[in-house]
Every structure is written in structure tokens, then in C-alpha cells.
Image (tube, rainbow, N blue to C red):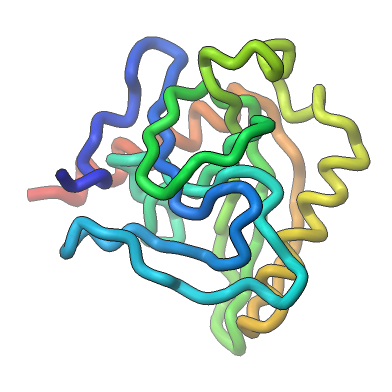
Length: 178
């Protein structure tokens, strides 16, 4: 089954998120739809682990040409390929530059499991402690450091902006398909 082709939305207000790199992973995994399997993308710098599950929202096409990136905030690691029905809580708007190429947007969406009892009070990224948001930014910088990528954080935005970003990315993919 091609996980990239799953419907984006499970029901109103709930998106599907596919885990690529689980919380605690020391490597970045990437789903390869051509072979319908996960491949090692790269190890993270020594000592760095994913703070939460990392993956993508299926049937979307982000501005960087990949499915929309998503970090699923919850307290238990899962495994690659798990589909987590989630509520969007916001987005970190990011301008990314690779080498001497022109900068481009590579935003990171944040979600919580739709059926979570521990995270059900988190409805907006601004409900997360400011310290945690700073640590998440530091994680993204550290993860990109050895890849010759420069990140500029523009703004943390709430769930409405995240939902619009996902819907725009879903439409972008639909318009691209034959």
C-alpha cells in the first residue's frame, strides 16, 4: 500500500499523519513510495534524537516538493509506517536554504493524536511551553547543521494556519496529478 496516497483527512478536523522517524530515533527515515518501504535517509548528528514522532501528511505536496512535514506531539514513541489520526495544533514557518541555492519555505506542521488523553488539552502550538518551542527550533537547527542547510524561523502560527497549509498542499497535489 502506498502510504503517500492515503486520504489526507480521516474526518472533519482530523488528519492522517504517517510516522517516518519515531520519537527517540537517532536516524532520519524516509518513506519511498516507488518501493513502498522506508529507507534510511541519514543518521542524525551524534547525541541527537527525535523529540517526538516525525513524518508526513499523505496526499499533500508542500512548497519544497515533498509531502507536508509533521511532528506529532505525544509521550510514547511509535514506529515507522504507523498512521496516527491527529488534530493540527499549528505550524512553525521556516525559510530554508541549501548551499548557495535560493531560500524556500519548508514549514513544519505540529499535531497531537486525536484520541490522546494526555495531549487533549493542547489545541494550539502556543499551549506548548515556550521553552519546548525553543528546544524544538534548536533540534531542527542541529538536525540540519551537517547537511549544509540554513534555517530561518519566521513565526509560530496556530491551528487555522496549519489547516490552511495542509488544505493548500492537498489541492496542490490534486492539481499536479493527471
